[in-house]
Amino acid sequence: MEQKEKKISKAIIQRLPRYYRYLGELLSTGVDRISSSDFSKLMGVTASQIRQDLNNFGGFGQQGYGYNVKNLYEEIGKILGIDRVHNIIVIGAGNFGKALAGYSDFERRGFRIKALFDKDASKVGKTYSGIEILPMDSIKDYIRDNNIEIAALTVPKDSAIELANELKDTGIKGIWNFAHTDLDVPEDIVVENVHLSESIMRLSYNMKSRSIGR
Amino acid sequence: MEQKEKKISKAIIQRLPRYYRYLGELLSTGVDRISSSDFSKLMGVTASQIRQDLNNFGGFGQQGYGYNVKNLYEEIGKILGIDRVHNIIVIGAGNFGKALAGYSDFERRGFRIKALFDKDASKVGKTYSGIEILPMDSIKDYIRDNNIEIAALTVPKDSAIELANELKDTGIKGIWNFAHTDLDVPEDIVVENVHLSESIMRLSYNMKSRSIGR
Image (tube, rainbow over all chains, first blue to last red; front, side):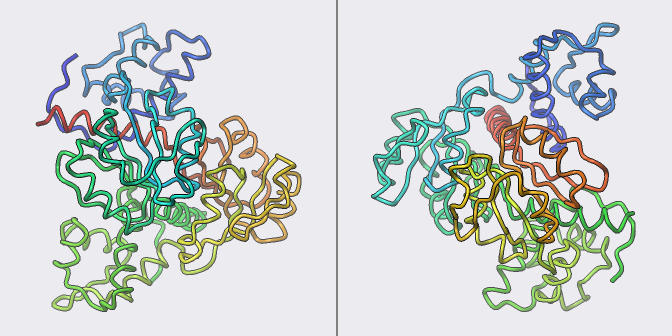
């Protein structure tokens, strides 16, 4: 299946990893085929919505058969670009950095955290979950020598802005940004933000509107 | 301003906390008024988009004046329900739980983490960032006695599903879910998910489509 240079909506990109997760759970419980209506019920999304979403990438269901779980799982994996390993470094070996290092789920999905970096010299040389903490001044060489594609930034706001600037010419393709700021990077670097403060504000908003709605 | 029982789109709820963050930054640098076009440039969102978003809540700009930063900041704070304190507990005192406990930004925004809970008896009684770890069997009493509205779940998938079930009748209004699963809760509880595996898959997808697009 060739992926066209077609604009895929953000909403679909939100849903694809969720399809992938549910298909992975089905696979691990031995389900190899699912009707489009059962899959719809499981996902809490209409069958036609699922069909529409998948049609953006060629469509995978067969009339009267439903979906082949393994096949669809693998195809969505390809669409998401996780049919191969991505090497990651985590910059900032605080609690968030250590939490990422210890999260085995990433490795299972093809995201391999290769090293942590911290400016605190007393942390350098220690390991968390088998991953070593290296000094900040070795970042650029490390990226080049280890085919690193993604840098996760778990540092304060100002450091994140500086780092995003320093990472510009290193060949890094993606920044996974946990700092509470937007980053200004060249077009060929993708930023995915995890803004926890915004997430909890959305929770607060939804709690408030739920209680007004009743 | 009375908030109507009007369906506000998810996209707007995504953008509101970001407006709030930028307005807070403007305030802290002493800016008290901003033209709608300068605000638009700063946010990277068209002026008419901002106007439309805010019109859902009554509208706040004045023709020829722009926006009063403090006023808009406070009004968006009210819309988000963060004009008052929300008490939170964090269940799971692993690295993520500790990271949340140490994140002073939440407190500044009216989210006060009151206690951590962990099933590991050897952790109970310890404190992180001044927040004590309490035993799991005291959760229900603690929620009742301390006016807790939000429970953050930083536990494995299966525990999160169990906990969501146990929290049902405690008066908890929101669950901030860091576990890699969807939670089935009654209608009066709001769930906000932070699915990191899905976030990094979106990063991977966008990296892939960016490189195809070029």
